Length: 330
Image (cartoon, rainbow, N blue to C red; front, side):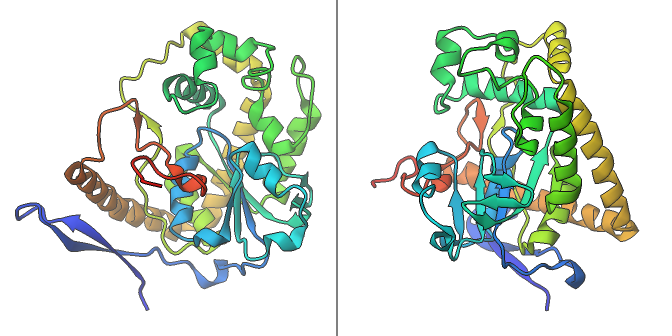
């Protein structure tokens, strides 16, 4: 039986009244690629890798009580003293956090199946730096602006707030290893590569987002992976990053660059292994998702939720269950 997602959309041909209008077929998941949901999944969310968009998709596929978000220290510590039984019913854990153990992957003494997204290291760093300086709700917004922190400072500073930011952070997060920030972390890099290839259940690349989404969606058994882009920098936001800064970022993040090249080759091989039918499936998905994104934009325009700002479709309170969304009376 074909599955559909029914959404509300404006009627372009009439007076823009909101009427049921678009039925989107849910992408078919090949039966041989469906997985049982015994161990929870863990979304190792590297900042500025389209993770907010991914989380929006995950929210459409998991019930609130099945998800555990670890985006604040208080969330992480709340469960630190418990045992594995305290997480019964949790099917997905997500956050900007290291695992308690990487091989085999464990979180709160419970086995997890890890997936993640990577992005070109320099593009990710620039996006992170600009985002943190631009959005007032980030933890470093005041620090970066009050101290006039430049991108070069962001890459080289040894201050507590910045010392890990611009020095091979992807290698650190994917390996779980600590290393000398002034040297080349060969052992940590080799560990991160092994985790990507042998330990994590799957991974994606922001630069190949739609292919990544379908591949990860197959493994997780997601029924609905249509999306609109979330938490992206608006066009025209000033980056203040020069050519010399880019060269410095490449130099300071040589391990991340090697890791990204390795991941790109591995991803390409896995995508090719899915056969020619996969490319056709990606094309069909893109065509339908373009319609979905257009409808989302029309609804936002009609409801007045598309206001101007430096961050388009910013992240909202769903990651923080004890907080009310903006404008709520709670």
